[in-house]
Length: 426
Ligand code: SF4
Image 1 (tube, rainbow, N blue to C red):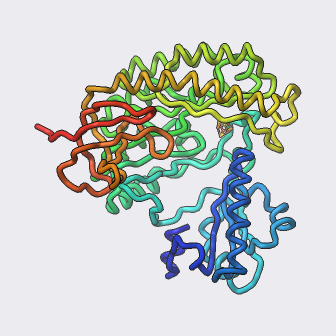
Image 2 (cartoon, protein in one colour):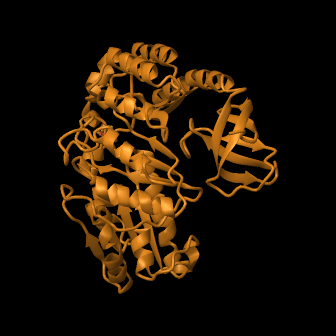
Image 3 (cartoon, rainbow, N blue to C red):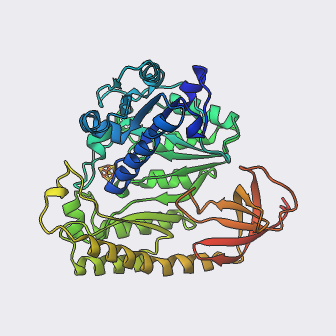
């Protein structure tokens, strides 16, 4: 959308008070995200009284999921842009600025728009590459399939073209995202084509790191693991959300794995990629979850020893089957379990960080902390925003964001590492 807006000749500002038009790209995955989206919309709406604002538009999941409610309850909004209509953003802006309420929606089964260009909102040599849209898995707690539609892979040619353009703009690290990346290609090529895509992307000059997010455990096969092992640009980093480890809960969630399959999958990943960083996500307080289920989960986590782990409190989403299930867990218990799981994992993460001390790693520079006189970077073990960082002392030059440097790890600071620059002898 940023690309199309800029192409049309509009100037983009990150100072909302100066803007004639504000477009809020919303989320509604869980209740907290929805509330944050609504709060943003309301705070920008107040700029109609106090600033220059002529039109307020929204796009993204909240726009798609709650269009009827938005029409009724949020008259401050002048334009609503659905998931599949982001290529109509400029028309929507023009209509809204001229004083007409506007809505742009196309069926969710349509192919995602092919927008021939990108304007990066992330600095620092990193860009996300969305390889597919939607999901067919229908986990019982998840609203995504009904908000974003069925799984639609984006053609390889489009992705390669986009990645080449990003590389020309200085992007060094590509982060492949989708609601589920491991199934890439199944709809358009009738087979899982992620290994091929990784191989083609890694042929692009300028792209140095390729990171995979949102891998569904059941869909990770040897072919994918081997293609990662044999392709030095693809990082040995797996984000594999498991959500739980109790068979009873996994079954009720509609997940297609069980505990023993998860154990085997983790073992296999580590056999083929001994240096892998494994990240996962857990839901705490799913309906019917008992103390026994939590103990089973904690025991599993002690064995699995994930390098990174995020926990969400279960959020009952309207329209999902889990919302109507009996034995909903009270909020305070969900929160207590969430904290218990985090604390349990903290010990594992800190120990894993300790094990890094003395190692030589490559880091991509993301920023500088003038007060501490240290640079901030990420290693292959860290995805932006969700994982840790490495603080680098004694850099003898001033690198721009996105520069790769060699670092010897000298210590740890909680979830982060501390290191010293060293010159490569290669
Ligand atoms: S696989 Fe992920 S996106 Fe798809 S339904 Fe399950 S939780 Fe939602």
